[in-house]
Length: 211
Image 1 (cartoon, helix red, strand yellow):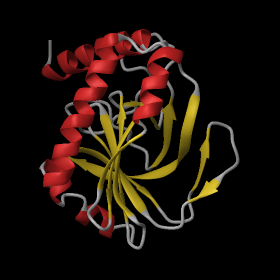
Image 2 (cartoon, helix red, strand yellow):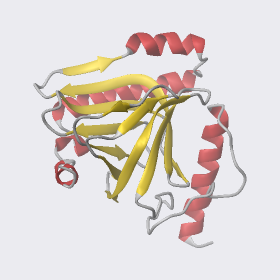
Image 3 (cartoon, helix red, strand yellow):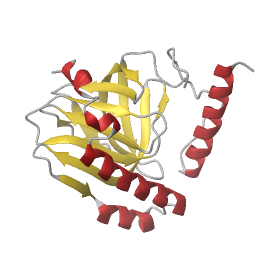
Image 4 (cartoon, helix red, strand yellow):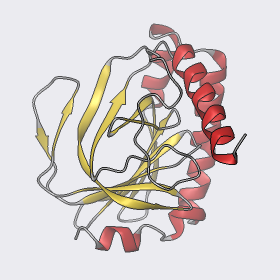
């Protein structure tokens, strides 16, 4: 079997298992309707317009908004969210962003990151999520409440621990999801604070494309 087919078969099986465990729908067929570009992972959309969709555990719609695909590198897939973009929390009223930002969706990690342009007071905002999934021009992940935030003045915050504890009960998070979310949050606190990996400035060139 060609290497590309092996990668895609593995990826499809992993996505299907994860979606079933999270109570999300699984559509038939390997690839789940993906249109891809030349990535060995076979899961990056070739279109420039992207819809970013966060859901809560169980599938309820959370924050969602439009974005524009910038490209990909060793860290994952980057999209632009220009100033003036409208986002909705579920089906709630639209909220307009006043400053430009970019978002990073890693290929196999339990987080997504936003990097905001000045003068936004938040420099880096990282959501602990399930691994982002690409399908039909949409990137989707389950928001697991915990957020690691680096303010422009250097302060580091681990946010929404109370919500995470509450949802473990009310939404019935499985033990392995709880453990992975906590491990990810602890790793992010160190990585963001110390500027490790992508948090060491790899976003700057991408952000310059939208500011």
